[in-house]
Length: 395
Image 1: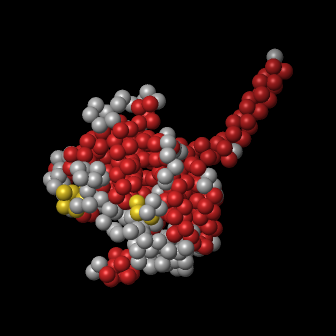
Image 2: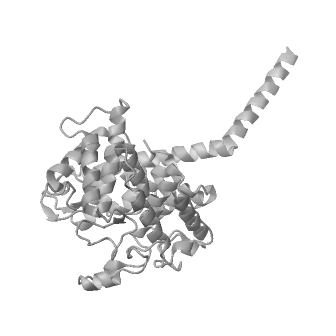
Image 3: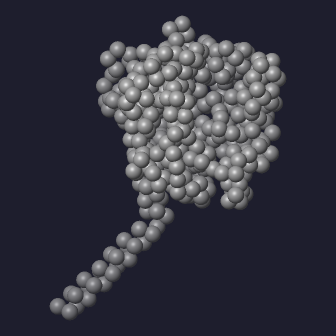
């Protein structure tokens, strides 16, 4: 009997040691961290819906667009793109259809098939013309939605089949927002796409998605030109892009001067526009292994690894000097996206710890940071966290 007890004790010790080994192993640690990110993503998606889509009277009595408290609850097409991407990644067809229907009822430009960029919370268009980044995100979300239908996960939309609308929208983007078959314009009314470029609109992963969906190869030249422009900027060795430039990577100040815009409207620093390059180019590396994307993201990661805490994960001049003395959830979300795409687990943990440190209100209030006032910041934080959790993926 004593021998049996000893065998049992020894077996128990081995089992406990094995469980401890598993619990403390890198794989287990990664799984635990992924679960932590997943819970934050779920909580902040629920908060996002409550704060920006279904918030009652400020949200146009739940009109269905994504509304921004920081701009008197106006809605922009960018928010439609973000909301649709979030909803399809979260397998939330009900919210997807609410946003999708509202965008067509309020923002659709019947002449072009694109979406006007801005409306008030009464459903009146107050900003005519489209923003290319939004149209592109909407088209990508529609392809993912159609894939869910094809997989039997969603039922088809009753009046606007996702796939049909995706085809129409991709064709409209090509017709109105691409010049000479290679230059991506910020919108249909931005000339020839060479004098002013927003590199954070450059979405190479989406172009590969479009070509796969439509069985074409027409977006290759747009991808090539985007990487040419990106690598022509002075920040390229550090993986830093400017908010605005021309197609040759030089400042777009002449365009702003010619069109009577303040020079800050053509910022040549990496600020709230260009920080999204880390996410958009990062997806091309993470999903498709594009060498030019992976090279860019590797340079960005190497630059960040060298930064002391007081200059880490911020916005920068193109020579690498911080332009702010703080970081917020938007910056952290995008630098996290870049770190995840780079495969640098140490860097991802360093950025991720800072973002998780700004999650004190995530479970109680449904938002990142100290305030829910800025829908844009919440969106970028969510995308970074969803990449870290594995919930933002190629469907």
